[in-house]
Length: 210
Figure 1: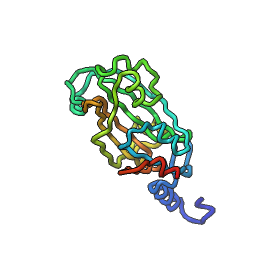
Figure 2: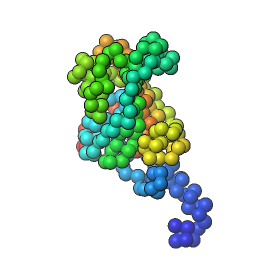
Figure 3: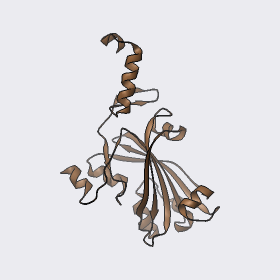
């Protein structure tokens, strides 16, 4: 590009970095630069699964389970789940994709006592549906937080991005039908893959498809 446009390599690099920051292009480790596909519309307050939301936008959603384990609750997660330190907690890490492109890594923390045997079920499905069908838990999202951040080592590897790549961090506490905390989720999105659209009335997917 520097030779074709008769400019310096530094100028080319700066232009690429600026376009990446604006979400026009993206990098993948050891693969190079690519034009960013259209962003997905995402309402973090809706009680709609990732797969359902993406499908309604006429795109293909994918889920890969990266890891699953049972651990003792740390002080940090016990505060978020409102439970005692040391009680059993399930942690599930999943990679989410849209049209074959990895766009988000999520880490799900669940009280083990509320859903015994959860890790034995297929976890590449909707957690909302699974919790309802197998454990009678109706989930409601609350206390949602979002902030820009940079990808750390683990999320960057899963997304095929460089450490330090811009991302959107989203966390939410999930309550059951009795307003008891049952789950705490963290999501790390590629910044160029998402368009946050919070609906205060009507149906987001109908607006998208209309």
